[in-house]
Image 1 (cartoon, rainbow over the protein chains, first blue to last red):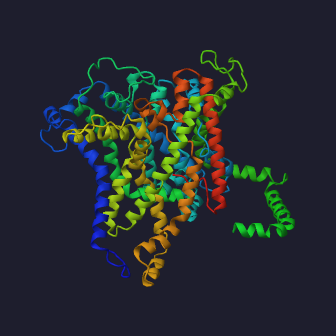
Image 2 (image 1 turned 180 degrees about the vertical axis):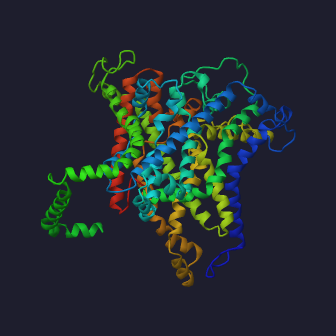
Image 3 (image 1 turned 90 degrees about the horizontal axis):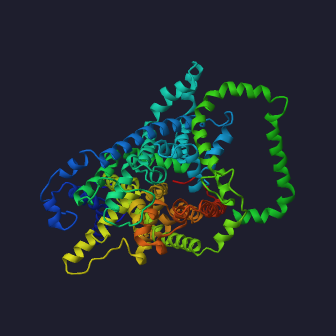
Length: 299
Length: 340
């Protein structure tokens, strides 16, 4: 079924074909690399050797790479670290952001303007690499998981998006509850939040993805490689395992790892890094556009 | 609008500034007069204390991790040593900045940064616009949603992942080399070639973020009055003429705004992407300002020097953003808060 308006001319056959081809190429450029990576990670050693690199046509399938990865050791531990940091970090970030977005959603309330200004001003400048490092180290957070969570726990953009959404909720809805003597916390929990599931999911996704993908903070603040999150492991064993990057950046080598891992195992690490995003994404996708557009327009 | 303002300027100069000034003063003084102040404050506190309490954790975190670190910039004026600490390190005034001005590697990094910004402005910036127009022309809603879902996705992949995927495609042992070799050609390694590095990072950026970048343009496209298209079509305007005379003018405000904001961010090309590839490609092509600061400080231990470079970059960046924002306002746009 098409919804082409009556005044529009039917697309020419060549034009339509070209458009279809272009769209197919675009979609394939995203999906094809992912397909090959997943397939290679699931292939037997023989199948990988036979193809001379990434596997395109499935031949021998096996779960050996994953079994090896999750038999314990560096990757297993780093998945645990990444999951933990993501869960704890997202919980902290989301609750702090929701609270502040609501707290700053009523113009004219006490200190509303200066506090909002303080939040918005962070759009203008980042704290800078060195000063940030000095602060984190003087707080004693080096080599703790808090160094991956606290410095980026609040993103002004997310706060502003959320606040814009809360401000769109008609005042009358909460007013009646307020007259009945409900506290602001109760109003937020029982009225405002249930009306904002979509935007909460999107902001939660933004934070969770940020934590899951967090890489450089770990390189910067974690000297102890037993604490490495998955992204650092990914870089070490997949990017550097092939000696693409020969230098090192303050990260040591891992004891007990003598050989560079096989391609199937490398690709399995990539899949493990990819999987949570592929898994959560469809649930949040339908809210995505809405949340971002509100942020862009109202912010 | 601009023209009008300047034209009426001379006449308005005498009356309006003074007029608006006083009216503002009166309005400001109203609620803030000394006599009335304590009473409202107390009742406002009583009314709003819960809201303040709610805002406190986030604002506190921002102060600690965004504002307090600014103080750390003082080490740019010192000869800082981590073993001695900020309080005991000797002050050296602007020495670090003077050194910086004569440091070729600093200027190389600056030039690289600007070259990459320029290249991406030409080859990345138009891509989301074209992609948005293309997506907008897909009439079947479900198909469109599907394609949108696919092209947004790489935005959520980490840079480590994106660089890894590109390495698997275009690296020395990647798919491209493999295919070439299978057909009797020599393999190529695009991941370590300094000459093509700028195109490589742009391709990576396009793959990761062009889809996501369409969102704002799709919103602008949806806001264009559909009657315009119908009227134009009835008048005999072809598909391309409609694109040129209706679609592009409709997108113009957003394009101008994003262009200006991008110029304000000219010194930021993204850190992790370059950090990950700098060693494979070499400093000459891949050193940008952010990586310069990182390597000079945390690896060679020249803390004060790196901090000075970071401070210069931050200040120039701040000026650029403020100027860009001024220009955006000139164009009648909202400016800085509109960033995604």
